[in-house]
Every structure is written in C-alpha cells, then in structure tokens.
Length: 481
Ligand code: NAD
Image (cartoon, rainbow, N blue to C red):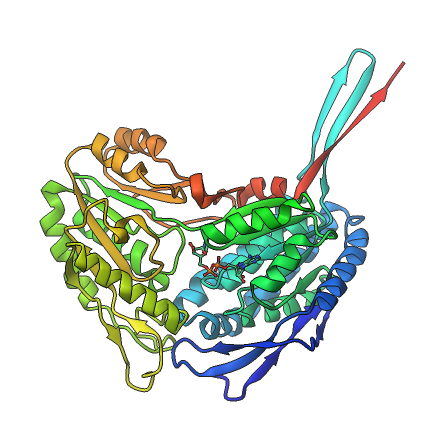
C-alpha cells in the first residue's frame, strides 16, 4: 500500500499537467487513510485536453481500421501483462477484494480493448444501388468524446468507454470519479507505452464542477456517463447547450425471480453473488430477490447460513470475501437504509452491522445483510442502496412476479432462475430491462450489449452497438449517367 500522499494530476497529451486549483483528498476505503491528493483540473487544463485530443484525433481518424485495431490489441496485451499492478490500484481506488479486481474488473477492460480492436477491422457501412446511381453509407468518428465515470469499476469504466471510442477513430477525455483517480492514470500510461499515440486518451480529474465544464465544452462531441439517475438528468441538460450526444449508464434496482423449480444451491449462489459481489456496489445487482413461496423458507435458511460465514475485511487478504465500501458517507447511507427497512417491518435475517476488522479499524466495512419479509412499498425495495443488502420478497405465480418485478422506474438488469426453458424465454421477454440473465447473473461478454431501459439510461456499452454510439453515418450518392 502507498505510504506517502501522492499528488494526482490530469494526464494530457502523454504528460501530467499541473492545475493551480483546489484538490480533493483520496482515501483508501479499507483504512480510511488519505493516500493521494487529486488536483481539480481548471478550465484551462480542460481546454488543453480538448486541443490535444482534437489534434491527435485528426491524425488517428486517417489510420485504417486495421491499423487502429492492431494498436488497441497491442495495448490490451500490455494491460494483461500489468494485470496484477492494475488490480492493486483498483483495490486502492475502490476497496473491493483483490481477487475480484484481478479476475474481473481489470481483465474485462482488456477484453473490451481486444474486442473493439478486432471488431473495427471489419466494421463498415452499407452499399446501395439504383438504376442510374450507386451510394454508400459509412460510419465516421464524432471527434473528441468524453466519459464521466462512477467509482465502483474504475478500470472497466475507463476501457468500456474509451475502447469503442478509440477504435472508431475518436479521441477520448475521461473524467474518473473523484473518489477513484488512480487506476485510469496507469491505464493511459500503459496504453501510450504500447503505442497509442499521445493525446488520444486524456484523463481529467475533479468533481461535478469540471464534469459540468466537460458537458458544456463546445469542442466535445459526445458524453458517456456512468453514474446515478439524478446525475444523468443534469448531464443531459448540461450537454444540451452544445447538442452533444449522450449515453447514460445509470442506477438500478434489479429483480431476480427464483421460480419453484430452481435448484436451491444454484439459486443461493446466484442471489448472493448478485447482491454481495463488490460489496453490493454494482449498478445491475439484483437487490429485489423474488422467491416462489414453496421454496422461500428453505432458500432463505440456506442463504442466511452461507452469508453469515462470509469474511469481511482486508481486501488484499486471500481469505476475505467482502471488502470495504467506498466512503464513510456511503457506509452511513447504507446503514440508514437497513435501519429504515427494519423500521418499515422487514426482518433482519442476517448482517446489518458495521465491522471494524483488526488492523483496518478505520475502514468502511459492513456485514452482508439479508432483509426478509420485505414488501414492495418499502423504501429498501424501491430505492437503490448500492451496498451489500438483499431484500427478499415472496410471490405465488409468474404473472404476479413479472408485474411486481416491472413495477419500478429502473430497468437496468433482471434475472430469472428456472429449469423450464419455455418459461425462461417467455418471462425474459416480459421483463423490462436492458439485460436479462437466466440461470446466471451479471455476466457481460464484450460482444453482448449492456445498458439500461427506463430511468436506468439509454445507449449501450460493449458489442457493436457501442461502435454505433461513438460514430455518425455519412451517406454518399454517386450519379452514374
Ligand atoms: P454519481 O452520479 O454521483 O457520479 C458519477 C460521476 O458523475 C462522477 O464522476 C461525478 O464527479 C460526476 N458528476 C456528478 N455530478 C455531475 C454534474 N452535474 N455534471 C457532470 N458530472 C457530474 O455516481 P457515483 O456515486 O459515482 O456512482 C454510483 C452510481 O452510479 C449508482 O447510481 C450506480 O447505479 C451508477 N452506476 C451505473 C452503472 C451502469 O453501467 N449503469 C455502473 C456503475 C454505477
């Protein structure tokens, strides 16, 4: 772990750029210690980033898809070689357990780079023909695109946004969350060392103030946000002044429907991972677990027994299952939500306490928590908590489960556990969500689109749809007579 307080500056055109403005303290969530000071980029620094990105993009757009793809695939390989180092930085950023960062977040970023590097080599437009003319439409880059990130998956967010943008021939400016500034800096440096021309991936640090300036900057063509619903609304409004395109990856309150025919072992494993992975700080987590009445008692007993044995503590320790939450303030919010659930009549089946592991007494730890006997109207069931808190609800038939699962303004993910194939297809078509997982949860291969419906946002990350989102269509008509 870092011992000295590092100064984190914005990264522009391949070098770190000082800003004479204020700074934000970066805490290590597992100890609460300040490990870095993050300089808030000034408007001048943002202007420098846009100018560098704009100049680099003009050159980059001239490269063929194959040339760009080769560079991105080489960068993906360099990131894989640095996987352990990046995973350690991700732990310092987020406080999540190392094994998750090392096997999940960081490789999923390299996967994206590799996928888009390969995809761009064959990605193109459509040909048209008429009696006396031919035409073609082709995909063209937008110019300088920007990403604004949440704090829960900083490596993945950096690459899920920048990889399709860069593949398509754009330059990119990333503003990571002010709480997780570390890993993206290293990613940019590694990619540049691997051959990505300087100026194509710039990192700007700061909070909502520089975020707003990014949204309003006339030199930026598109914003992709990962964040909360209220932030999404603000960003859309801010981006309107310059008519920017917007992709919004927002919050969720996903349902997981566990049917009567589900295998209990498997159902418990999926429900727990869909609630406690990354200490529950996952936007698509299935925090409303609807269980068929006939299996509810047995499944709850199984989940309580297993959840109570999960170890909370040092994120770097191999035997730890659950790391820290991102901040003291967030921990307070999660604890208040649990109390609110109990006050509204939910039963605290397990967990619910703050934990102070030995040697990590100042960290932001909480026991994984199951609330049973929940009702749809409770606040814990309606609102996103973004912590390790599962709400268990009981249903009697499929129609009821679907109706209740869809009775939310969110629509990011949804899950279904059943052995009945026809039911799986029927119910997954009825669930109002951008992503539905059957007999699994939160699996997102790079070629599968990911994104929300309803208030969970619009636009897609991963897959060829992301290349669409970072490009425009240009049509050419050629008369032949
Ligand atoms: P947040 O909305 O508070 O902040 C997200 C980012 O937006 C940060 O970088 C922040 O500095 C910036 N920001 C805030 N206000 C801004 C403004 N007015 N203009 C420009 N930028 C602004 O979210 P968070 O607390 O960092 O992350 C948690 C939220 O993110 C949860 O709601 C979670 O569901 C959501 N999330 C969604 C996805 C997804 O893919 N759908 C993934 C991860 C997290």
